[in-house]
Amino acid sequence: MIEFDGVGHSYGTRTVLSDVDLTLAERRVAFVGANGSGKSTLARMINGLVRPTTGRVRVDGLDPGEDGRAVRRKVGFVFTNPDSQIVMPTAGEDVAFSLRRSGLSKAERERRAAEVLAGHGLAGYEDHPAHQLSGGQKQLLALCAMLVLEPDVLVCDEPTTLLDLRNKRRFTELLTSLPQQIVLVTHDLDLLGGFDRVVVIDEGRVAADDEPGAALRHYRKLVE
Image (cartoon, rainbow, N blue to C red; front, side, top):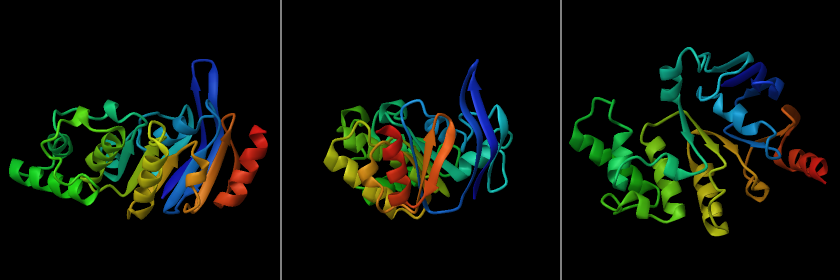
């Protein structure tokens, strides 16, 4: 359960979110809105990357700002550009690096990394140079580095922006197949048919909150 209670946020004198009240319990939730609407800022509050200026955020009753370590065990985050998340030379090492504080042996970390890579389209890529992967493969690698931690929630901030149409569809299909609760920030409206709920953010406020068809009709009217 993710809760936003009267949440607002400002960067200096610029207010980007105001009075956001949401409770997210559905398995597949998307945030949509124009550039600068505040949707990414809202998503980043879920695991404490951004703290609210006003109001509060709770993840299963925990405050991401005060209980950051506990929340990060529950919430994985995938960024727009996978290069910002890939930190190790090879794909296998990068996924295993996520388990560095797990207490597992090196051999077990490597085994778990290979297992997760194989389960998500990167079988046999353990020794492949991470930064020489294709764009779609890099995004899969960034996802695997989060999934190996077995989070309850996965927040993805425009993860398909740098992908071609085929990889966008494949990546979104993978997301919708995962057991985790997914919170997706996206501009790719055509990919949201399988989602349970779409929240439209406009100028820092919730403008619509409904099933995908109704919410996206509202959003399209806003941008006409």
